[in-house]
Amino acid sequence: MDSSPPLASSVSVAYLQGLVDHLQRHGIEPAALLAEVQLTPAILAQRDQRIAASAYLKLLGLGVELTGDDCLGLHLGESVRPGYYGVLGYLVMSCATLADALHRQARYAALVGNLGLVGLDDEPPRPGLEPQVALGWQPLLMQQRRQASEETLAAWLSFGRWISGLDVAPTEVRFQHAAPADTAEHARIFRCPVLFGQADNVLVFPKRMLATPLGQADAQVRGTLDAYADRLLGELHGGSVLDRARLELAGQLGERVPDLESLAERLQLSPRTLQRRLREAGLSFSQLLDETRQQLVLHYLRDPTLELADIAFFVGFSESGSLVRAFRRWTGQSPSEYRRRLPAG
Image (tube, rainbow, N blue to C red; front, side):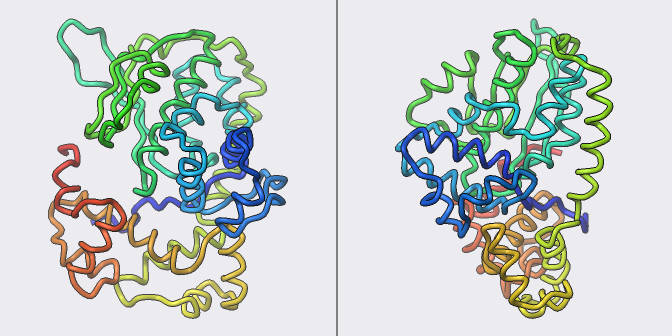
């Protein structure tokens, strides 16, 4: 069993700015919006700051409710700007080819937000179709899965069109979530077959496009930004109180259900300081515990040798029934239903 599952942790304030800007254009004031996750507009001036991944997803869901826009994720992705990606946006712009840009995007994606895992793989061959590649995204949290997945893939395509100068369409787009009632916006933005209820979330496009030259390539700038991004990535991984708290919780859950006081002690903080640090990220202790459990369960369900009773034990549930109820609350389906839909292998 893999003892180090990936854990979604945080989203950059630069990326949050994109959501806030979009909703403000629809008449939603930042102060009222951010108050829903215990934040204030002052955080928007701290572009190097991070907020909890779950706080961003809650704001994304609120955005859908407040605007009445069922395709909010798509529209956010369509309107993406380089500045919303922070240093990664400018690094990608300086790359020589699309392949260079995609490899850096996969490597440094966590600088924008580690809501999911990014991968670039060869697509299985199809008769009569030239070789294809699939740029994929696997969410680490199930909240707002549809909106987050559609935002991510639409943003990749919009940004790719912009940096390449090519108004191209993918060969195919696939999403894990069920088809919404109206898919007209998907057709308008992607301009290709869009499939729902699939095993993955991917943009599929011809492999030859990886060699596409980018118009703003600059080797000197790229070298400088590579070094800067490496340093930021090193600081990000495990360095923040939020990251350390998640790792401590993940390690303790199989032994006992942690409380705020015991977690604060392990982190060498006072309970009040830990509460404050979590609040600054838009998170409470109970939310941190719940989403850490969720991510661990999603990770363990990928191991077919693990029984539900084992997984329940690993994440601190007294019995498998408690796990099933929690999983339905997180995802709207049972663990066995989720497992059946996982891609083979």
